[in-house]
Amino acid sequence: MNLKNSSGKSPLNVCDEEMLTVIKAFQTLAKKDSSGRTSLHKACGSGDFKLVKSLVSSGASPLWKDNGGWTPLHAASLKGHFKIVKYLLKTGISPNQQAKNLDSPLHDASENGHNDVVQILLDHGANVELKNEKGSTPFDVAADEGFILFYLKHFDFIIFD
Image 1 (spheres, rainbow, N blue to C red):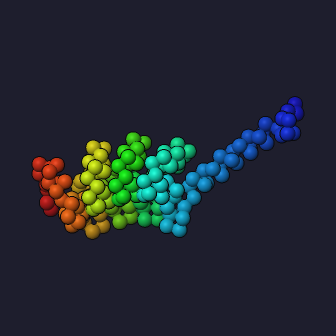
Image 2 (spheres, helix red, strand yellow; image 1 turned 60 degrees about the vertical axis):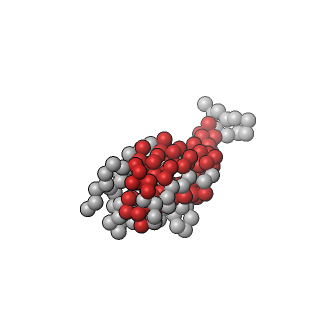
Image 3 (cartoon, rainbow, N blue to C red; image 1 turned 120 degrees about the horizontal axis):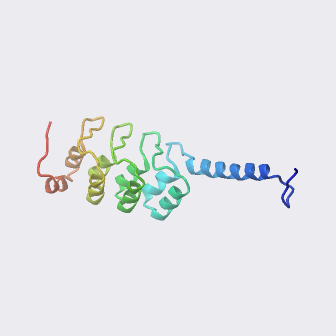
């Protein structure tokens, strides 16, 4: 049987073309710049919620890491983009992923005084005892940057090493 469409293409040719289109679209989503950041990293860092949703729904992964091991959740947490952090956490991504320097998204939000982001990360199981390569917990980096009040108001006790 010799089936062809109006363009003279067989079903296999059409499938091959459609698969190639899907592969090219995915390659575009996964394309990284010189620092390893994808479009999703950039959208999360800039606070473009609509673009973040569009990229994720198109197949961009919140698990992709840049050259420093940062995920898009790190980028959003660092900049305090609460709505994006909340959205990414709803995809099931762990709030405890650590970059190469062992900073977690909670370290990033704590260091920059983004208390609403700190709270939602904690609500989703962020570990307050994770230490970065300097041996600092999120509490430590918050204290170093003058953002300790949030922790003092929200924790009945704090364990010091």
